[in-house]
Length: 131
Image (cartoon, rainbow, N blue to C red; front, side, top):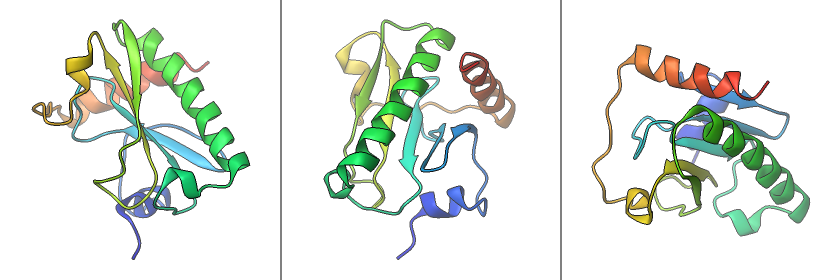
């Protein structure tokens, strides 16, 4: 069964895209734990990160590294935490979350809500730090 991420990758569902490369895409999580919470997703639909061939996983992590550095520059935070849980959607994805402590990375925390304009502004702030 196709994942919602595949529909986002193919442009069938809109997203707040941060960046894209040949094998991966990064976009804002629409149910964020923190401002700037971003998902990094391989374009190939694979459920579990450990099922990615080593080279693809390395490329995905390099892309996540680049995006994480841009988030750190754009969003005031102590660190950009990384999580790969994989329970929400059966398509490998990395959560990059700007945080100031471990508690802020707990997925049981209430999700933030932003307007379309706010999401666009957050994405743009992160994109500007990629340059």
